[in-house]
Length: 295
Image (cartoon, rainbow, N blue to C red):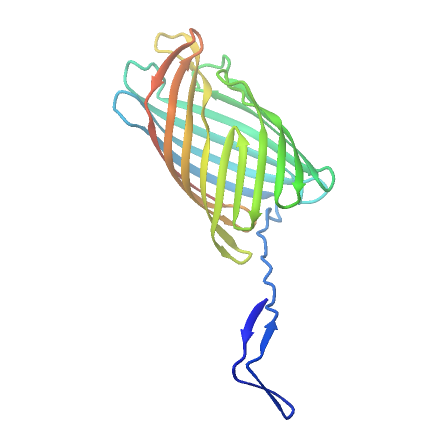
């Protein structure tokens, strides 16, 4: 409602009304949400890269490149598709000679994801990702499985939802974790995902109708993974890189999915573990810069 004070004349027949306050109803402007899916089989094709640089030279740094393609298969409708995402990632490592790691680590696999409404308040989701994670010099313990199963309860529809489930990471250092938390959306311009093992806050900076949106975000979560490798002495082993990451950045989302992102932050509490003898190398804090684009 818009309050307008008329100090001039409001002419009605032969009567002149002076100084009248009139309530004028302003038309409600409804936001048009972005389309979540494209009306085609190819839903997304993305490429991202990044760098995690050690704060000192007697440590370990990494540069990575990640490519993926997502296809959507409607199961009843495109509002609830089965998403199939083949992906490939390579991490190039740079470390001092005393840290026995290969020059490159690889991760190639296929993700299957589906979320389906159960009723007006509940949704069920599941994801599995079989993959090979290794330095491509050994196949022993290279096969890994990531899996997620959860239920989402809309406690307050469109405002507050609660997630309950579990995630199997397929990592030797952290095999599984609970997937619990809540998502609070006080309005259309912000969202808080207070969840474990990753918490994120989003703030919308701009919106171009039904075409695109620009968001700022901050994330706190667990980084790293497990790979099968061959050590410098020829023995087969597994290594696990682990850290905690605090990042902030910008993300543009376009209708139908896709867009771009830029991100920076710090990785702390970093460590490298060799699974054969359970020895651990403590690593220093690192700086993170990453970005990507997706169709």
